[in-house]
Length: 275
Length: 320
Image (cartoon, rainbow over all chains, first blue to last red; front, side):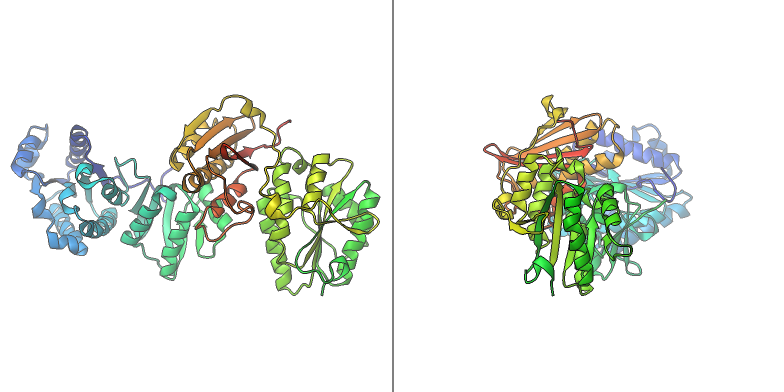
């Protein structure tokens, strides 16, 4: 299924949990190589020693020339994300928007980034701001030629922190995270995967941080990739919409979701069937 | 103002009518309905096709008696409770002083799925008690099994006899007591074989995946999705409210899928759980209600080993 009725999940914003360094390197290089092949500028944003990363990258076929020409760059983490910018999430989005504009002005087709971002989200306060940023940058990516693989280290951050971050990406390798809250088409939020009792608290947190907003009294959520949702999660969504004076509408939800919504028969919760 | 035998009664006036012939059924049904119409009370028939025709022929043309279409209302006990409650609330909002309903369960409800209809007959003493309802539940003595009739006597406070007497049922048992009992349940023949899947302490996600994996494509997708929902809710309840060890077993037959979910606990404290939605989803009651709405048969069993729910989608009417 493709086309407007059931758009595919976006592939431009994967979240990568780095458990296995070799698997991560392979995934990161594949991500960046695809960018180079498409004429994009690619950045490897690292919190490690930039010179060491650059010499590693030079040994990878294709990257030596790209680094020489400026099509590929190794960027120290501090040069991209500034601590006060992390608190000011809109400024951080603007920074990548400007960088994307500069890449386009330099003749590239877009900007693609692998970002080792563990150092930015060590404290709960940092995570609160950064998860909000993750959703805003996710929205930016849907309408601009910018893509990013966000890399987090579970050994440093712990499972809960990684889950808080991963659930706000439309893809990646954090398979233990059951659901995704992502930016869908037309400025809507989308839900993918499975929502149940075990994800209840994480979903509440993600909703609070992404804070999807209604338009004309309807909070439309793209649900064509939502495989399962329980009544508790539906009530969370309904409550989020209700706080903003809106009804929650699950667009293109599957028959199982539609049937549950019909059973619950709540005035502020609907399913919109898409042909 | 209520008229007839229920005059002066507060709440639900629940009677069984056990008849031996069409004449005996008509002898009570016709005056029950016509007296209701004459008193301006909504008078409703919820019969299968055969007895509905019988009644239509016996009633005058344009009698004012309302016939509910088909037997859909009795697809599932929980759905029937919901639909009747909505209907009753509508009549009361419209100013009805009493509503009269005569109904009969489809013949298939008196077979291997009778246990959950017996629970229905008991639970409605409570579920309809906020309405000025007088209902007659008709059972044909020629075809209704004796064990079912015993349950009818225990779940109906009184009988209306063919000669018009309203007789208290000596074995009537309050729902709070009746619903805490184990109902006799026949093992599904599929359960004689080892289950296709057995999971110990699964997460709800693992339980859902197991149902999807066990699906061989013989059932409609909606049936499989319904079992996914039911198993997910039941495992979630077992993990949250039950005690270890939680076990999921799955059997797949040519026309149905059967799952059992057990835990070491005592099951829900609310005897109406599953039949009537409880609260706004905060407790397990709504999950069990959704489970009852999603399956074509749900049985519950409490024992020394814990609490087990058996969930069936597809055709639950196996040959016993």
